[in-house]
Image (cartoon, one colour):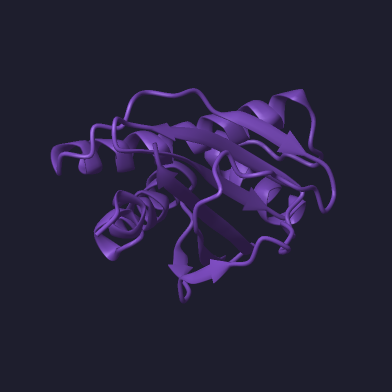
Length: 163
């Protein structure tokens, strides 16, 4: 079994799913529910307005994690997270997207590294703009976990390939 194929299984996806649910609940008082994980096609675009992107690097694989929100969903979540109303995507809210991505990645990385995946530390970047595109860092499979909250939907995408 190749490393990329092995990594797509629930043992790799679940830590990101659980970290996302926990982070939204504890940091933003927002309950989220995960939908059915699906394989994203190369031609599929993001439907979000702001995305946190973080690279995955280990000795066995490379890839990325993207957390993509429609503006309305993201601004409501961030407002809850910082305790003040956020009404537009700007430098401050982009920083919030990076921090949220970093928290989710950090929690998942702890679980995955305890399981022996050896993921290195990475810094997130943020892409904003209506209906933007994010080009994956690898040509591997792109698994998407859709989430629904009381303030709207968002997705987490994991893309991996062998190093």
